[in-house]
Length: 401
Image (cartoon, rainbow, N blue to C red; front, side):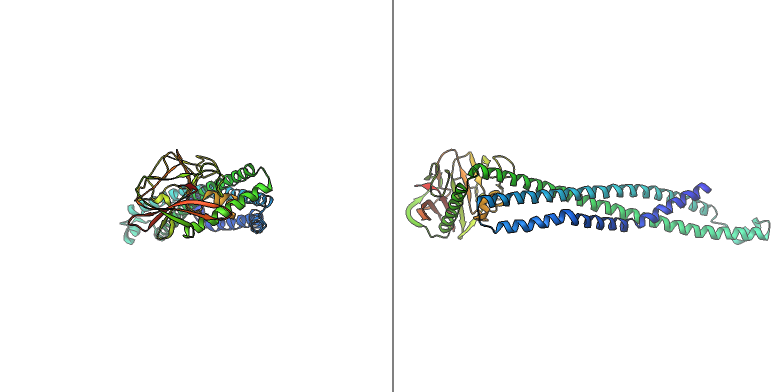
């Protein structure tokens, strides 16, 4: 009997202590968050402000490298912060596992006690006051037995409440643990993205130094070339180029060839392919069929961090170049925009830069062909195809007719 009482007291103690666990955990979380704010978060805020200041400085090679170094350090701090949050969340899940295990024991003991009480009450369910009187040997015995039955009923009620409370706390702690596990999963995904960003930024700095050979004049030439090309492309898309009608062409017909090597505002031979629908540029991958493609738009060819090539399409066009296609920059907010100096020139790439197995360029649809050029220091040549029975236009830049 004494052993049962001790077990019952032990179970009640655990049940009551778990009741306050959520508040204790919340206080610990607030203290940890304040500590994190005091070091990592302050550093992050400091370098975010520094990055903003550097962005507004004159665009020199040294300022660009300083900007990249600051960006790399800032991303490293964010990785460190996320790792700290992961460690804290894993610790909290471990403590919850311990509490839930203890509460499980408590609930088992309380349940056993409750079953024993119910069994005893069931055995004595037919006892009445008359039975108690006749079964007693004295008036004192009668009083004691009546008191016992009353105490037993009250005790049973108390144990029932304790079981209900322990079960409620048990479920609450399990829900809290599941919430923490979801938070942990989100943190791990965030860490993967941050580590990928850090790698991209380091690769972008390496490529810049390789391209410029750490020479300021070379860097300024790259900037000037990119600005001129961007201005020319914007003018062509706006319809401001000088154009001459060639005539009607059919789908798959050769319409031009890529200029080999460097040309106006281009350091190497490639096709800048643009799709316009009603005057607005569209993602070419929404129109082109699946094809063998080598993605070199990220930190390196096939690195996995390159620009997206997937969209749900219903047009299924043949490509303007023969496969295998090599893509050097995709559509939209590209890897280059996010991670290299070209992000200082433009923030959205309105076409795709590609090469193929030959320099021949083919029409992706029946339509009317125009030869054009747009001058910004030099004449950027292009072909324009107005698609037949459609409000679609395709542009083919850095080509000869």
